[in-house]
Image (cartoon, rainbow, N blue to C red):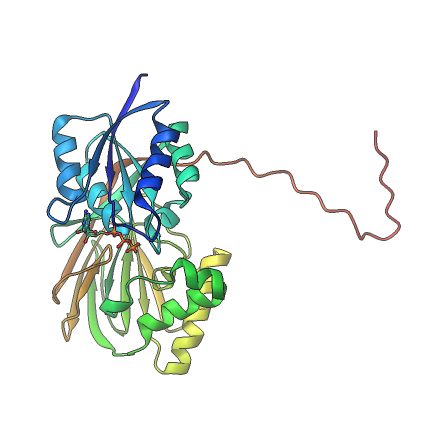
Length: 318
Ligand SMILES: Nc1ncnc2c1ncn2[C@@H]1O[C@H](COP(=O)(O)OP(=O)(O)OP(=O)(O)O)[C@@H](O)[C@H]1O
């Protein structure tokens, strides 16, 4: 066996049975990869276990748990050449959904076994590592967007409701945004800076085309004037995310830059990768090509054909 990895496993993440989930991961990975298994505890989190693994100079780190566990472990590998794998077992699984990685155990393990990696950007927000996004003006308790159960139950509505939940207070604030080449001043209800974002994070979808390895961060500014406008904006952002076309409403703005300095009045809380920080200015800088992450093989698009229904159709098989 030539491959090895440190598996960091949160035994309390998600709603499944952790013993059988760990057994399943081992049965899929261990025939190919020598695993050093480390369980997180209340006292010793994924951040500490991953930092120790980095110090030991492991070949790869595989993190398994909810988004909290995955972000904490990912932050430790930023800037190293240690390959990083994720096996999501949480509720929202934003991390996997943002990077197009399956959120089932067999699917995620298969990606790691295939061994293909992509080097993605990370970011630094007020001195803290960030992989997904920073939200300014978000409701702290609405950070976890649409969960799996509501997604299954409500489908598209769950995404829209999640965004609305975040906009529900509609408290606006003045914001000044400084990039390398300009200063933008406006009023907003939510400002999101994303390195990567799942489609559920609709407040990050202004540009509808977040690229995780372009050395740039994507900012979306949302400023609906009324509750009715907030509903229309949430629906519009959901549609832009699915269609790939940027937002066109007047109350949505977006731009890309290597770094942003954001000052709000009154000061707003900053939420970094789901963790709520104290209110104040935010300085966010992209760290280009910072994490080597296991990703699925990109399938070549299947040639599509649809002929049925055409008038007077004749198809001759050759
Ligand atoms: N052995 C453990 N016992 C109790 N708490 C733990 C243990 N290991 C990790 N934790 C806690 O688990 C939290 C991280 O949970 P994580 O985000 O991975 O899963 P989750 O909350 O189930 O996911 P999601 O938010 O997607 O539902 C951290 O607060 C950490 O302190």
